[in-house]
Length: 130
Image 1 (cartoon, rainbow, N blue to C red):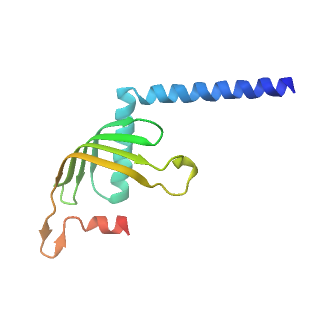
Image 2: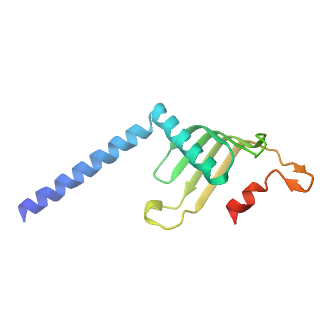
Image 3: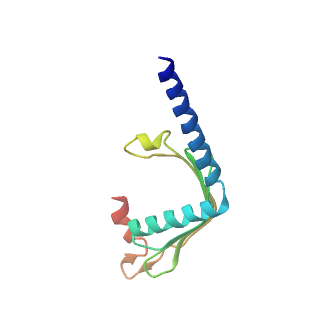
């Protein structure tokens, strides 16, 4: 019984240590830039248009901030530009099937919606949100 207790204590110490290393790592600017580039690339593939994220930050496990977010339309024109975006999502999101945005704050927002003939420059987003 004592041996099992020692192993479980060791496992907890190792887990806390690993989480601490990840937490410290995600606070470093080079790691944040790498995460921002990876997220922008993944979002770009999903929506089919270029996305840029200038910076990324993590508050607690479900609080995030994005800096200099830009989404371009299919013609390469800026569709959405956000200076700072803060959001909070579902608690314990890795354990859930869906993620819900609980809080969203946008600062310095510019939106450019245009219509060419009968097609809006946002029409490519219709497939994504359906």
